[in-house]
Length: 387
Image (cartoon, rainbow, N blue to C red):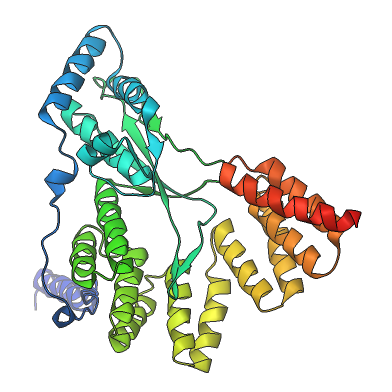
């Protein structure tokens, strides 16, 4: 065989070998959708996305006039919306309700999601881009009919209009204006969020409201709509599971929780509510597993705070103290750990230390309701000490 032909055959064989031994990337199978017992609920209509952000025609025109005048005078677009909201919201009051943009104007208030929706509505009219920050604050910890509820908080960032690109400059962070009319001193940044997360949170809040009113069909329709925007959000999966449990379908609730654990779509709140179900079933092994997971999966100071409260309720005061001391070391400005430590000192009969810790909690809180609670406890201890 001529040398040239032999080399050609050898080269071809080597190429063939490379082609046959090279591994192709394996595409993981698509994740199955969350199990949901659709037969348990009847279809119900819910507000559509466009209606959430719709403004009355008269209000839209008034805002546009203001916006165009201010931009023409040299004010940046994101600042114009901030100034307009600041003027409009002087008479706004915090309410626990989640409203659409029009309903927020009508009622003169709303919660943080309501105002994020209203801000987004004006941003749509002006053509301003937005981003969101999800923050955790000291849980407004409620237990309603064996359901643990924890609120979350959104901040809106109005992004500055994009400037023509300059090849000599690199933009690392796009400038903008943060809107937060209900600031919390104890807020901790959790994650960045997008428009879809806001819409999902809007529907989720309304789903919880319907569920607590035992309007289960409406709650189901709303949580399904929420998950169409954020299917992997553990809080939405948790609400779906709680809904099935409260509607009397514990097996479906357990399947949903198992789905969340299998695919690592978990949160402290989801694990806490699964623990409620496990205790109802007296599933000892599952209870132990979930309690351990609550400890290992804690991420925010408020997750650790919840674990400490659970330890106090069980009488494990040394364990609770260790958790709370770490929270104080990492976030010394939060009032809640001092309050819980005061509770431990009181249970141990050390009223003087409990009183001093309550004074620290009062000093560090800016929330009037919390201040009233802490002050009342402090007054009670003061009277006990003086006796």
